[in-house]
Image 1: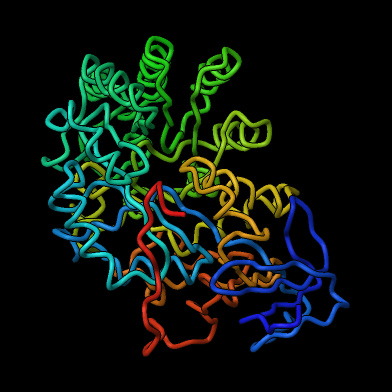
Image 2: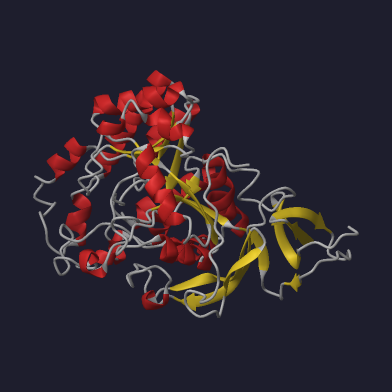
Length: 461
């Protein structure tokens, strides 16, 4: 330790090696170079000691983010999305292939997306490719360019340029990704079930009734679609990941598939763990998402499934739009755009809900940093404070609280299902590769701070 490190952070509580301990974390050239005992003298050009009440945790890895640039940058964009990420303790995002124009369904579309992201990113950014009918047969070319896997819808996506796969096309996609040991990530709702539900008198076609909206997207839609994915995985050996699970009834199928040893992983989202249908007012379309937020009993089942390992991870599914689209139809759930803007708040929101249930912070970090990094093959580099890992670090105050103000959030449009909600867990400082990318108290957008995020591929070392 004769040569000074670039940065040293001293903290009474550091989450490293799967446990909490007092430690000194030393950073050199953007990576964690050493972890020492708290009483050791460690020379560095900059030494920071976290105050009482703050703990040092790894940066959150969010594997489900819709940035929407280019093409729908008025909905979001790489500048605002990555500033929101940094403010929420998220140091890595993996961008979804829609709702940008062009979508990331070709090598050329991926190049356009990377060109847009490179000069703006305040955190590290990787990319999913898209499996749509037109891209089947050419997925390997995107895989070779470094996408982390391929997103598919089994029901209409809501945008014309990203059509869903039929049952036969789902099987073809799984066969294709199995051939190069890729990953298919799936929005699993069955369109035939959705079409039948639309004829149900309880599922009113339009209007402000939240329960009618939930009835229009029943749990059976998730169950049947997940059953199709499981059957396809069993037949092809492909690896698949179920996105944004909202249905507790589908957990039986997932448990069975995992017991069978099938290579299936599952995520849920902060909004399914934080809200319940009983408390969503009619006309409150800021809560609209697909699949929908269901009732309290269902929410309890999702938490149980996280605790027993049936659900592997939590990702935000940050899916923003303009306020005009989000509130289109003046409270009509069929007219309003579906999606929750939760990137900046996902970590505090999950911690708040976990804390209320007596679930420790280390479990939350497992679901939102460790397991998300593993999903995309970034474990060892992201999601943990270990020697050799990227120095993506967060000074987090778990017992401090704050009231959400949608207009003060970093994402582009001032719409949030969490508006005026009190959350526990304040992100004081976020470091990306040892550089500060967020500091509590900074002016919004951190004027003068140069974006330092990197573009990630599977092959990045």
